[in-house]
Length: 126
Image 1 (cartoon, rainbow, N blue to C red):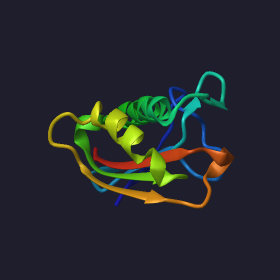
Image 2: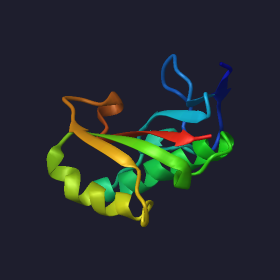
Image 3: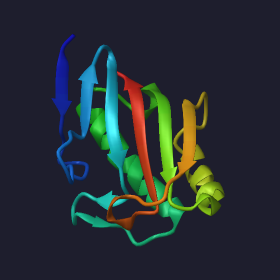
Image 4: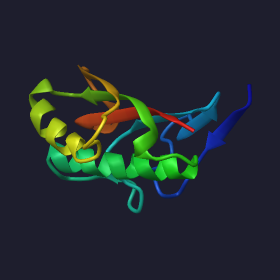
């Protein structure tokens, strides 16, 4: 099976030894995205709703570079530093999947890179 590294300047560059995404076996596996503005490289100073929207803009850019879209997402994993942010995240999340949303898991974690409050990864059809 062929494996293709996906990279775009439209989303934050990896902050470690990983790729923004990998296309393999008919799928695109997008690494976890933080609410980082790719133009500045800084976390957005916003509520979790705004952070969620920034993350999905980043995810859209990576998926576009891979030849996919949010409409082709089959699985989402949301990592929250505080499950009390779930409702705000969920409201912003729903804006991106108004019909036939993908499968999703949401978990609270002890800590995220850069002390972010939310991180999201997706798997989409290529």
